[in-house]
Length: 137
Image (tube, rainbow, N blue to C red; front, side):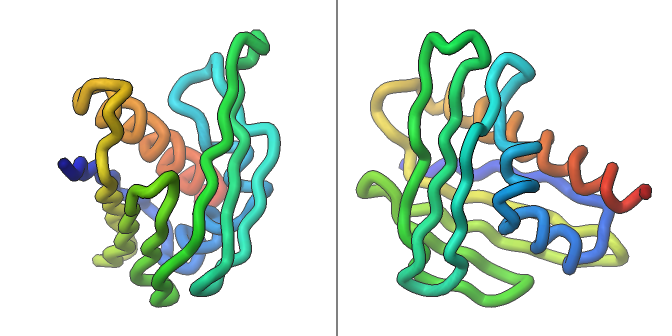
């Protein structure tokens, strides 16, 4: 089963793309809630390149690495990747000074589809807020 989440970012595609792929930016937005954070991030943005983000609970009770390999990249439009035997497709759809970012991913079996949708949507919403704050500067 695949799950799709999306958000609209009020910023030019260049800023959206940069914030999505910059490890320092990723550490600022990649968390589903304030009690989680990303402590490390690497990005080798090319087909066959790898990515990794270490997400941890701020109280130290748990953490995990979200890591995979890029399989297709179309600058300012599309990033496809594989992680843990699953696929992820991220579309960047610019229109009238805004960009819709749409993620479609294979669900996993540990958490319900709704839990996964909520978690991924929360991260995506934090991304939109992060980029909007950069754009407002």
